Length: 129
Image (cartoon, rainbow, N blue to C red; front, top):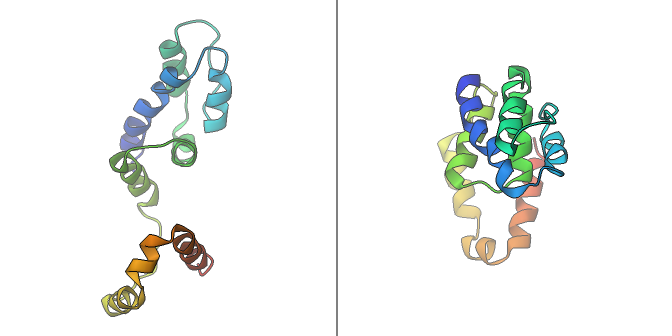
């Protein structure tokens, strides 16, 4: 996993917590993401920067997963974080033929028009792994 790139991607989101939090609720927001304790003194930016700089490399993936879980990201940021987290993770090889057959078997109209049905499909697929 490319921890340098992961740290760079996370920095913006962690420092961005200052925009949606007050000094009083900032410690709770950081704790929920798995960030180190904030210093008591300083501006929100300074406190968040100090916390983020003291974050151990081993904890970067946890913070990334929690940001993905608790925060709304742009598709580009979400995909970049997921790609970094999943890099090196073993994945089953799915032959092209099987992918084409599954794509043909899915009724796209019903799939997109009924979000609950789509969620059930995803749940059933995730239970197969």
